[in-house]
Figure 1 (tube, rainbow, N blue to C red):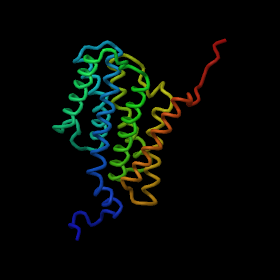
Figure 2: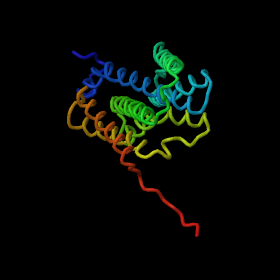
Figure 3: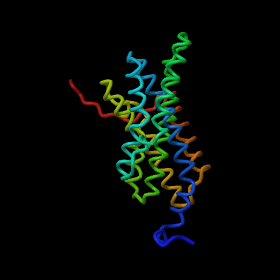
Length: 226
């Protein structure tokens, strides 16, 4: 029997909360590791020192989640004891590997694209799931998913004085929109499960990688300067 203070909660929300611990935490950790890698690569590419690389990786990995948690009015996950540790350990391990194997082309574009895509999709999922659980409307779910996914990368790019990837990279922010819409639509017709979310993640990753290979991009508005 449910306690009195949760009797008004829907069965769908209860089901979401039952798997939220495993799925959201797992997606957060996966997103942190993937975004720490992409932030590390950006730091190396811009010739930052070790502290600068750690800062770039930490902003990329934790920034979006902090924005998400502030909107949800909860303690930012970056203040959890092991999330920052995962970021720093990942960054230092990558730096150690790079120093040991200098011949490795650590800045290869494919490595960056894959890691950034995984982080993007993972945080899109956590933002969407938590927004659905909080009872946000259609636009609320999309916005929270979007901000969670791109927030860290925007902070990183601003720090190193370059145009944020979401403004110039094809099918970057669009992936967060696809993920949030798919999860929201699915949640209306069936309780979300780990398998369902994994399927959405696989579709989103595939679309992003295919878009990169094929050079797909959203239409742009060009002005005639003649």
